[in-house]
Image (cartoon, rainbow, N blue to C red; front, side, top):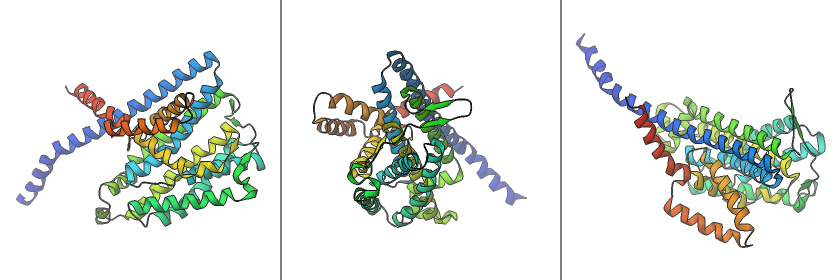
Length: 350
């Protein structure tokens, strides 16, 4: 009988610690959700103001910011949660854009068929690229993803059937049928709201997935990949899962691009696109998922505002980026989240 007393005592001692850890995780998750709900609220306020002013340009610019934010969200899933830096994630953004553009132009202007085809293509290509890339670690993983994207971009650039250097133009207007109503991509306001719903749906789906055992194993890989096998799981398998999910999120965001712009170009697969996505993640906050959306809005606004004054806007943005990294190394959400968490913790105390 005495043999059973010691384990019970140890569990009793651990209970307060485990409870504190659970409360801290819950507070951190709630803090990020506050920023997500704030983002949605700000987007809706913007939509009302832009609709009142009948400003199509800012609607289109904001929609593009959301699309690139979804791109960066896929990068953040790898970098912030699995600890994998991808320098070639533009491969999947361009893949989504090209597959969507081809479906819409060559087959039928079906919104759902385009998204479904992109999802299948991204899963297949992501699986193949992931099997190749996850064999390496650290800088070698980054270089392999960079090389894969460069090869794909050169193939697309030199394939005349895909438009070559001109890309695919003349993509028709798309109508997304939701049974009770239809959203037309030529209507700037309606399409902005549609993209907002899709991007935020992917965000909440990823957030929920990261709370599952599979998601926690992906996070464990970043913490210590070598200890994961001792838990009885394959680190390679869950790295591949994270890679495929990130590919799907990025490709689905890319699928929306030709619906917005009416064309697709090889530049969507170039290194500059991947580099901008990494910058976006760092600006918004690595490992937050919602941070890349804020970062994309900031970067898009800076490009638009600074670009209207000088053609050397990339230099100005580069300097501002270096300043932000020096003074806010954790990004916008990374800087604000601990303060919000502290406020929520004080609020929860009796």
